[in-house]
Length: 148
Image 1 (spheres, rainbow, N blue to C red):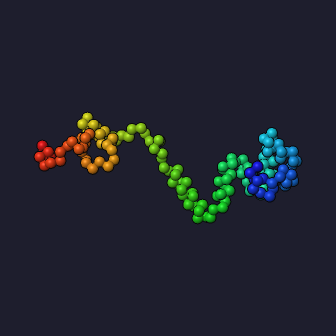
Image 2: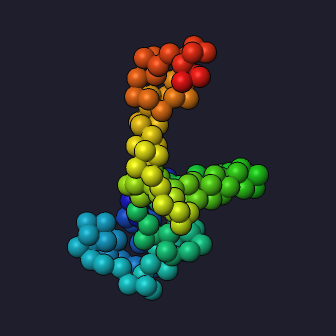
Image 3: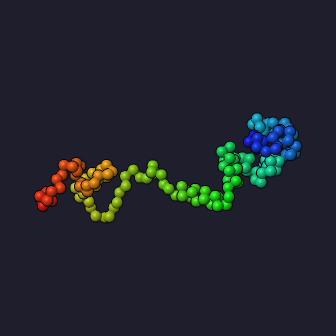
């Protein structure tokens, strides 16, 4: 309510009480958090501030700011923002992935292939060789080596 008072012409406790049809002491108790608002009181306050939905008064400060900014967007910008939110909601963060990915084809995998896969998975990016050896530079690439 304080934020609404700061951003509208209904900027004093007296003005709020007059527009809402409640006593100034009620407004003071609400602002100092000494009193909780009833649904009827929330609806009266919403009308006093020109707020369409009384639930707006129950929002946290950041939520209220977002709604105020949303109201200033064009229909095209709102569509863009909604698309972005939907895209972000579909992206699964890396920390949600299982710790160890596995593929099960139903065929047993040899220990050599498991070891080669493990070495390949920890290889530094940018390695030009497709070798499964741990030290790619130590492996000769000559024709003699390939025949062996």
